Amino acid sequence: TVSDLFDILALPVALLVLWLLHPVYGVLAAASCALIALLGVVLDRTTRGMLRAASDRQLQTAGELQGRLRQGDMLEGLGMLAAVVRRWQPAQAAALAEGDAAQARARAVRGITEFAGFLAQGMTVVVGVILTLHDQASPGSIIAAMMLTAMATQPVARIVLAWREWAFAALAWRRLRELFAEHAVPLPRAADPEGVAGLWLRELAWTPPGATRPVIEGLSLHCATGS
Image 1 (cartoon, rainbow, N blue to C red):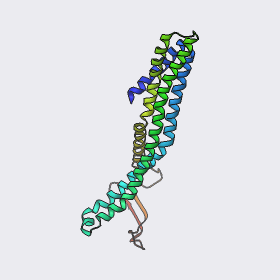
Image 2 (image 1 turned 180 degrees about the horizontal axis):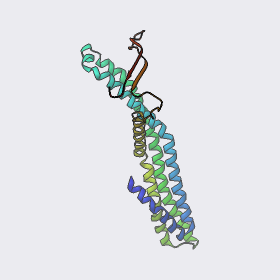
Image 3 (image 1 turned 30 degrees about the horizontal axis):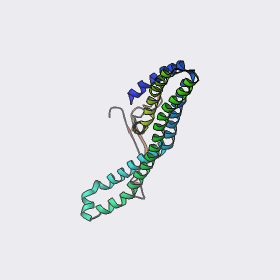
Image 4 (image 1 turned 90 degrees about the horizontal axis):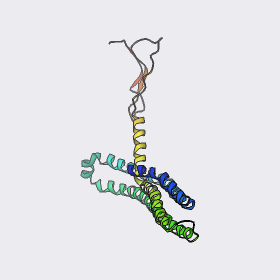
């Protein structure tokens, strides 16, 4: 969410304070954040293609069904409605299965990400105990380091865990861009200064679908400006 992006601004401050408590704290927290971010990259790389393919396939199957059901009354009258649905079901099931595979892989990486966050806090406590036993840190620094480590890693982990919403938003934005590009207003062409004013049709031909011969062929027409 947007609040997580603002929370991540506290990451440099938390790492700086941890470094001041002891450099080992800072290095451990930075390594934990890097590991969680790396898991997010792996999650995105391993699921984005599957998620996009599943979404495109679901849109395709939905479009095909919608196109077939435009003549729903005729299909029902001919007794073909059940057959149309039966032909659509395998493609829809394959699309849903592909989406489920992507989500199952995402859940596995999500579990590893959550475990990495808890492991970072546990390692901070272990490192704090070792430093305290060697008189390199105070016992109170253990609690402070654990809280600061959680402050540093939790925003990164939440952003990684929110990958699904970001992925769907990216897919929707890609479809909108393709739609706008496909239906964009054509750029105006500069007028030919040597051309004749008006509308010209030269050697126009048209063949109806399924026909073998054109019904219009070699049509040329000039409409003067204002006519």
